[in-house]
Amino acid sequence: MIATTGMLPGGYWDAEGILHREFELSILTGRDEELLAQTKYPESASLVTALLSRAVRRLGAISPVSRDVARELLVADRQYLLLKLRQATFGDVVQANLFCPWADCGRPASIKFKIDDLPVDEAAERAPFYAMTLSAEAAGGEGDDPGNELRREVRFRLPNGADQEALSPLLAGNEAGALSMLLARAIQSVGTLSPPSVEDAAALSSMARAEIEAEMERVAPKVELNIETTCPECGRGFLVPFDLQRFFFGELRTNADLLYRQVHYLAYHYHWGESEIMTMPGTKRQRYVELLADEIERLNHGA
Image (spheres, rainbow, N blue to C red):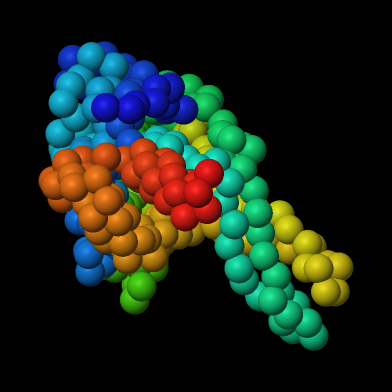
C-alpha cells in the first residue's frame, strides 16, 4: 500500500503523557472514495474523524489509529492530515472557481495554489495542558483583592476534533452558545472552578474570554487556509477562505462517476474483478487507464 509520512505541527498526547507526532498516511482506495462520496453530510467533523481513522496507518507508536485517537487530534493537525491526504489523492495543485467579492465587479475568478505552499506553523509550545493568568480586569476584581488572584488562574487544553463534533449542531444557529460550549470543554479550571460549566464559561467577562482565546491562538499550531488572490477583471486583491473539508469531500463526490467509469473500463479490458480494482488508489487506476488508452490508440493506428 502506497503511503506518505510526515510530522504533525502539533501532536497527540496519549494517556501516559507521551507525545506522538510522526504519522504514516495511506492513500485512499476506491472503496474509501466510494464510501465518502456517498456520505450525506460531507462537511461534518465526524466524517473527518472516520476518514482519518481509515487513512492514518500509524501515529508515532500508535497503530492502528482508532476513531477515538483521530477524534482527539488537534484541529490544526486534522487540517494538516486532510491537506496531505488531498495531496496524495488528487495531487499538489488545487484550483477552484469563484466570483470576485467586490460589489462593483462580481466577475468570475479562480484560485490556483500548491498545497505545499500553504503556510504551516508548528505549535509555539507543546503540552497536553497550558496555564495562564488572567489580567485583574478580566477576572472582574481589583488588583489588590486577595481573592482575585485565585480567580485569575486558568488551565486549558487546545480544541480538538471531539470539540468540533460536539459543536457542529450549534454553529449554524447559535455561534455564541457554541463558543461558550467550546470554552467549557477546553478549559480545565478557572480559579476554583474545576471544570467550569457552560454557564460558567458564558459568565466569563468578554475580556477574560478574549485573553483565553488569544493565549490558545498563541500556543496552537496553525494551518493558513486564507488564500490571497487577485481578480483578473478589476485587478483588486482579496482573501479567499479555503473551506478544506467541504472542498475535499466535494472533490470526492465529483469523482464518484469517474470512479465507476474507471472500474468499468479496467474490468472490461483487463478482466479484473471489481474488488481488485477498488483496492487501488486513484492515481494507480488513472495510470492503468492512460496506459490502456495509449495501447488502444496504437492498435487503432496500426503502429
